[in-house]
Image 1: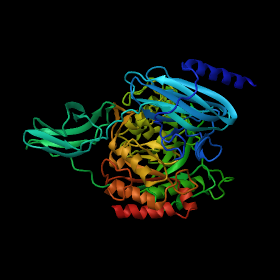
Image 2: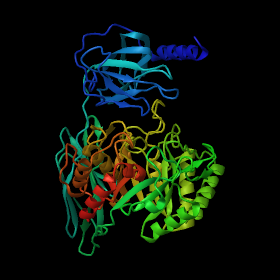
Image 3: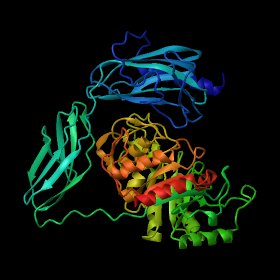
Image 4: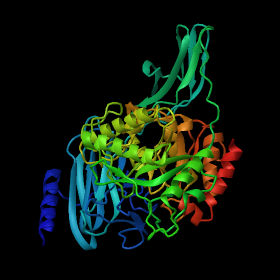
Length: 599
C-alpha cells in the first residue's frame, strides 16, 4: 500500500470513528422516504458532482434493473446526494448497498450528530447502515454516497432512509389581483396546498400574518410593492413575484414596461484555437450574430490576474488571417452594429484574483486587450475553480471572499474607465448560479462544494452595469427549480425552469431572508450548445422554440409553469460560432428567424 492509500484508510477510519453510530443490521423498512432509491429513474432526485461522470447503469446492480455508478477524480470524491424532508426529534435509519474500493454513505444537516460509514468491497455489493436522530428544529437532511479520491468507479444501489416522512413546504402562492383606492390597498392570492397561513410583505418588510387569502390595509398615497409567502410546520416558502399597487389619485402610475429591446444572438468565436470545429475568420462571421465573444483571454498563471490574448497560430489554424486583417474585420463588424468582446476564462483559463495586486493586474491587462483591438467590452466566462466562497461568507450583498471581492472591484473599475457604452456579459454554469437555490458555498457544516452559487454575489453587485447574463444551460447536472422539482438539461422544461429563476428571483440556500432578486428581462439570455458535439445537453431547435414560447408568451409550456411571462427576454447565446458553422448554421439561421418573428 502506498502512502496515499495509507492516509486514505486512516482518514476513512477517522470518519467512521466520528460518525457516532454503530454499524448494525438493517431493520425492516416501514417507510423509505428516499426519492429514486434504486436509480431506476436515472439520477432523478439526486445531485452529483459535475466531474463524477455519474450515471445509472444496468450492471452491476444489487436490485432492480439499475444502479448508480460514479468515478472519483484526484480532486473529487464523486459525491451524489439528495435532500430529504424529515420530522424533528425523530429516529431514522440510513442504509444502502455499495460496491467499490472505498465507498462512503452518510447524512448531514441532522441537527444533532452527522454520521457516515464506509466499506471496501471491490467485487461484490455490501450493505452499509447508519442510525441517527434529528434535532428539535430539523426539517430536512442531506444523504450522500461517494467514493474516494482517484480510487476508480464505485456503484451504489437501494439507498433507504427509513423513518417518518417530513412535512414539505407549501407551494408558493400566486398573487391574483392587487388593487388600490384613494386610501387603501387590497391584495388577493391563490390558496397554497398544505399551507396553514400566509405572510404579507410590503416593499420587502412583513406587514401581516393571516390565514385568509386576502389582505387589505389603509395607506397614504403612493406606490407599493407586495409579495406573499405560505407557511406550515415545515417553514415559510419563497416570496411570490412582486406586484405593484398605487394608492391615491395623486400617486404616480407605475413605470411602464421598457420598450422591447432588439433580440440578440450571442456567439463565442474560437479566436485563439480551433478545437476540431475549424477556424472562422472574423470577416466570415455571419450577420446573424449580434455579440461576438473572442475566446479566450487566459491568465499567465491562475493567481496572477495578468490576462493575455493570443490569436490562433497558423500551425493549428491554417486559414488564420493577419493581425491587420483581424483588426479591420472587427471594425467592419462594429460598423454593421455588432458588438465584439473579449471573453476571459473558459474551460482551461482558471482566474483567481486572490490579492489586490492580481485585481490591478487584471484591470491593466484586460484594458490593454480592449484597447489593442478597440473592443466593445468584456465577457466573464469563469469556470472550474475560479470562483468560490469561503466558510462563513453567506451574504449576497456583502461578500468577504477575496476572489469574489476583487473580481467585483475589477469589473467596477473597468466599467468606470470605459463608461456607459461598455458591454459587460457573463456566462456562468448552472452550478454557480441556480444551484445556489439549494447550496451556497461550503454550507454550515463545511461539507458542500464551496463553488456552489458563487457567481451570485458577482452578478448581484454588477446588476446595474450588467448588459447580459447568459447562464450555460448545458454541461449541467439536474438542478432544482422554484417548483421544488429537479429538471434535466436537453429539454425545453429545463430552460424554462432555469430562466424563470433568474427573472423571478429565488431564496439562496432556501433562506427567505437572503434572496437573489430578479434581473430585468432585457438582461437575460439562454445559453445553449450550437450542435450535439459542442457540449452535453444539446437541445433541438423545436424544443428551444417551445421554451421561448412558454417564457415570452405563456404558450407551449410543459410540466413547469413560470411565475410570469417575460415578453422582453433578450435572446440566446451559444457555444459556439465555429460549431454552428460546422453544423450547417442550424442554430443561427433557425433561431435568428424565430427571434425576428417574436419582435
